[in-house]
Length: 226
Ligand code: ADE
Image (cartoon, rainbow, N blue to C red; front, side):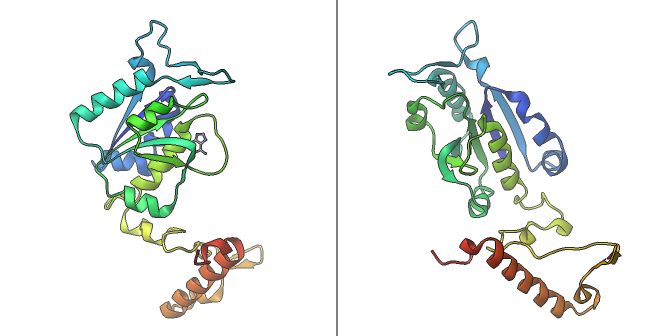
């Protein structure tokens, strides 16, 4: 998969892609990430990419020209499956969407900044507007890193068998069951007996029950049918 990220602050994206699974995905050839600095696409000698909004009001707006220039250049080189805009007005990102997007070959992610983008960017280029939750962060970069990470870990081969994404919370519509490692007894807090019983069916049953009861307690909305 190739991910092109358009941003006003490229350095915010340095470390999320330079470590751990995202780094390994690139080293193993499953992922290519290209970060584009929107200031490089400004026609203005001050490399300006924002301006006042028509009609007045607080907050600067990201101008269409630098964004259109960058996206148009990319689209001239290859087909993109989605052009995503990170915005708190977008559709709430879910594990189901991460699964779907992990099948794509090429995606563009535009990170919003300031008050947001000129509406015509959305009309002209954006195919998917995504929010990571009902709160506002200072720019789309951290949100883009979250969305990219949740997609990349699902690309077949990126995670080894021992880290299978299939057992992640949310992957089967449930939260994860509790997990333990050594020591067996820590200051009187013990590992449940079933986990050291060697009875694999009993362990499986216990894990399922725990996942369901945990989900019912913490996220009853995930168990309702609507
Ligand atoms: N930019 C600012 N807040 C955001 C959010 N909640 N989701 C996506 N992008 C954002």
